[in-house]
Each structure stands twice: as C-alpha cells, then as structure tokens.
Length: 96
Image (cartoon, rainbow, N blue to C red; front, side, top):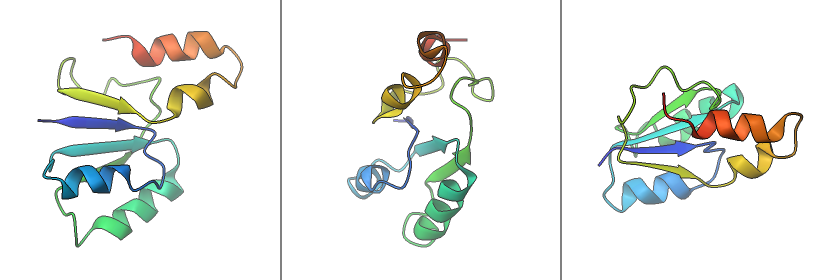
C-alpha cells in the first residue's frame, strides 16, 4: 500500500503508520524546516519513509492514481483560513 500524508508537519502520525507496518509512506509539507527535522528524526529508525517539501496545490510531481490512500490530518483546515480558500482546497483535491 502506498500512502500519501498531506501536510505532515512534525506530528508522530506517519511514524505510527510506519511502525504499524506501513513502510511505503510519503510525507509532504510546505515547510522545508519541518521536512528537514522529520528527515533527521526518522533517518535511522524509518529509512524507507520519505519526506518531501511540496505545495499540495501542485501535485504534478506525482502521477495520477499513484497512491492507494491520501491522508489529510489538518491541511484543509489551514487552507480554509487563507485568501481564495475554497479554490485552493479544490485545487488540492482535484485529480490531475
């Protein structure tokens, strides 16, 4: 199973997935600081897990239907607080 975690932040959620046996977990967040911290934190214990800096309004680096599941823990809430919020959420959710 290939899992995409949108807006992973520095939460332990992805680590829990990995430790439960889900090794193919791709984590994305717009914050390069968070991604760097998560890479460092998980490098040795969870070497198969990936962390990528990415704006979820542009998911073109991934092919359509390349994930079995996408998990959004709180990204939609954050997007709804900004300008053009409904447009940004629609962009995030559309399939390319």
